[in-house]
Image (cartoon, rainbow, N blue to C red; front, side, top):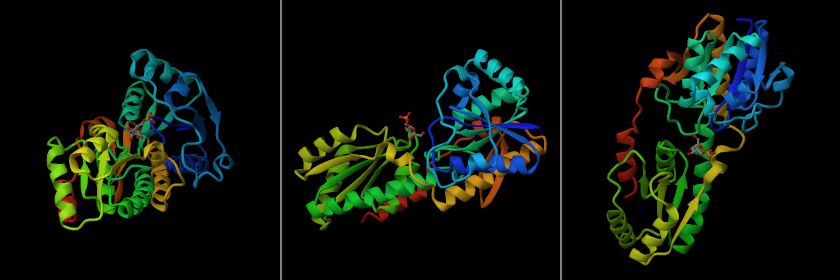
Amino acid sequence: VRTIGVLTSGGDAPGMNAAIRAVVRTAIANGIRVCGIRRGYHGLLKEEIIELTARDVADTIQRGGTILQTARCQTMRTEEGQQKAAAICKKYGIDGLVVIGGDGSFAGAQKLANLGVRTIGLPGTIDLDIACTDYTIGFDTAVNTAMEAIDKVRDTSTSHERCSIIEVMGRGAGYLALWCGIANGAEKILLPEEHDYDEQSMIDDIMECKKRGKKNYIIINAEGVGDSINMAKRIEEATGIETRATILGHMQRGGSPTCKDRVYASVMGAKAVELLMEGKSNRVVGYRHGEFIDFDINEALSMKKEIPAHQYEISKTLAL
Ligand code: F6P
């Protein structure tokens, strides 16, 4: 491989810069040129391609977001878009491409691999919703950011003896919600994966908890499980307990990456380049059972991931 392209795609995630930096420096250390592609596949199709030196990624490992910017690109889902993207890679001599993003981004990488551009995917999303890996770049930072914010909401919730609904991100996945629920000692965790959400039983539980002497009732609501603001109104009406909703929103996606995100993203970035140097293509890097490993993208995309049911049960017991 002579020239490696690197892009970030989909929602940004803290640690993406650490991964980009590792790709750039590992490649340059091995005599390989690196092209940074701005704004994901969208920028690739617009030829927003710049050469990156080791110095260009200095002072970036501690920064949130992505220095390359990112985008969600519909055109890359079409055959025409994929053909054009492959032709642009060839035009710029990019014979290896590292794509940092989620499943949608890997689907694009898979198509490019079929069209002769060697591709490696790195899991970058705060949602942790990539089946082949126990770790995704950005989750650790996001979950810690959310946890700290929820601690603050809890202080005021206890003072006022309120019920507080805190809505966290995660799209269709409840990992952020589950982890925060356990870490923040929530009374209730509403997960998109849990199909039997019953508001009346939650209302009964709120009253029960009050009888048991609880000073507040914290509900972690994964986005997608009903509207938190209206839920708060209904709960207040039914229980007579003041209820407030807080939607954490995009603050969960920003901020300086944690040590874990910096280190794991660095290792994954370096591994992506190593795989390309070994002539591999159509692979995605993952982390499982304490090891950094790689999977065929087709296989990775066909895997299913489930919320750990036992951990969810434990969270309920600990809400006693
Ligand atoms: O996938 C990351 C994520 O932050 C999800 O948790 C959320 O549903 C979505 O992106 C929000 O997307 P946008 O930034 O486009 O509003």
